[in-house]
Image 1 (cartoon, rainbow, N blue to C red):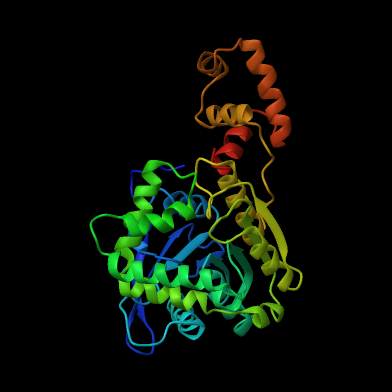
Image 2 (image 1 turned 60 degrees about the vertical axis):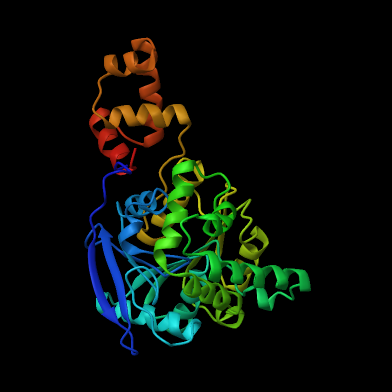
Length: 354
């Protein structure tokens, strides 16, 4: 996987919605491959994405087999704001503008977290454009449609007020309130970066308006009308959007496939096995690539050394094993990978990103 400290390259462009607001969008990954378009979700910034230890590894890994397209919703990142009320219609208009600017007749649509509702709405309105729908950490309806208790509503309103008053402060305390729920198992670098990502995306008034609009979303009827192949994924220990809401989302969509990811984070981080599983599922579903074989941590380490071009003696020295042991391990690995010999193994493990 590319170094997290060297920026990825992407092609940055701009388009407009009917109000004249500018929408920034970017493409990266494998040109000519199936297109995966990520709907805007909570706090995006297409430039900062490529420096983010949360989003950069995902963009890089998916870009090995797909062309990845991202954009900032109006008022966030490099996109400008307007006076159009936030909601499904505004979100779908942004998606329509980006797809028209990109030019692909069909594409896979990725809806993450708050972007899931917009992805569902677009796919329901334009089923002929969406080849595959992928939903991660999403739900069919926001807080206001879940019969919240008075305490839950009061807490929600308190969050909105805190965002409006404290979002732009040098102290990232307000941003960290969300970050701690999104990634309880994130490392210090990921947490600090996500705090900064939220701050850079927009000001407090805009962030509060987005959160308020997300709480009012309801796509239950649209989900039941979907007619596109759909993959729904959700982390087992997600605190921000509980697993039960992911089950409900999948159950609402005819024929949807559900996959649970073993993570406590809202979005799996690169150091978790769930991250590799997430990337494998999306690539297999969208690009029709068969899933790579499941390897043990020791087998993944061995495969990585093979991919680096090391010979048996070098691998034995690196792992502290006897040459005969390495030969036996390599024989078993080649069988598991379905290859004959080192040359084919090198190609296979590099294609797997190891």
